[in-house]
Amino acid sequence: MLNYVSKRILIGILTLLAASIVVFIVLEIVPGDPARLMLGMNATEDAVRALQQQMGLDQPLLVRYFSWIGGLLTGDFGKSYTYSVPVLNLISERVAVSLPLALISLFLSTIIAIPVGLFSASRRGTMADSGTMAIAQVGVAIPNFWFALLLVYVFAVSLRLVPAGGFPGWNAGIWAGFKSLILPSIALGLPQAAILARVTRSALLDVLGEDYIRTARAKGLTRRKVLYRHALRNALIPVLTILGLQFAFLLAGTIIIENVFYLPGLGRLVFQAITQRDLIVVEGVVMLLVATVILVNLLVDLSYALVDPRLRGRP
Image (cartoon, rainbow, N blue to C red; front, side, top):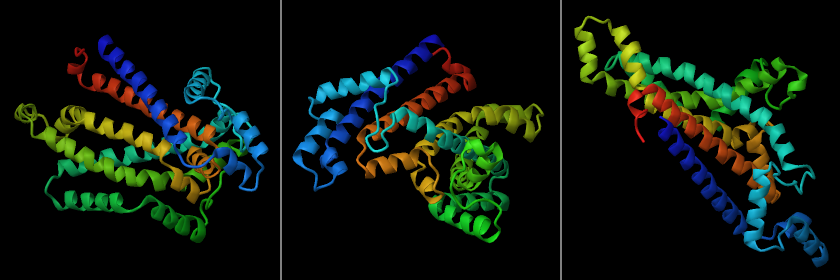
């Protein structure tokens, strides 16, 4: 088990290092001079050179890379040239919106998808199975931004049950903050629930065809006990994989939803930083998201060993 964990941690560190190189190079080769774009095309050459020196753009590429990596390792993400505040402060403010949004969406997706997948797999070939999978297919096909606009029109504009957008801040109260995240969470969570339900059904159907399931049924166990005690646990590996990918998507891929609902989250911060060519903010946020994805994948790998004891003895 220790070798298994050590190997996964080493792979995560190497992946993070490779990702830092890719992120840095990609942003470096993007056309345009960030200093000139920030000051405007009518800026003088002296002003552009002064800003380039302030941003460190006059230094060699390797010097800038190692300076950036050294800052990340010490918790210094640099200073935003657009907002004139430390990047870490910007990220901490936006994480307070994006992280609860991702967690609520993932919770909503899980509590809907797994029971639906179990229900559909236990009734394979019936009208109930076909109906639930047809609804799930519709959920997969519908774009989440269109679904978000539909939710706003029905529940915010017509029924006036929840706010149409914006975030009052957690200082306004937990209920006020949670209420503003209800529609975005539904818009993000339901399409992901449709995907997870289909994966859960497929994984369960594969397990239900195994010999040990037939043996358990032959011993007199009820279908419900076989499904919950034996089949579900052995079908969890692909489900956990999708859950890990979904959390990474919900945290990093919410740019459209956060813009639809005007939420001050990480996705909106990245979008604004890209349009304003605030590269230090883009680099910091992207690396944070990459590190989060790697950490989530590591936790998913460790959960495999908990679910499947056969993996604990692997090197």
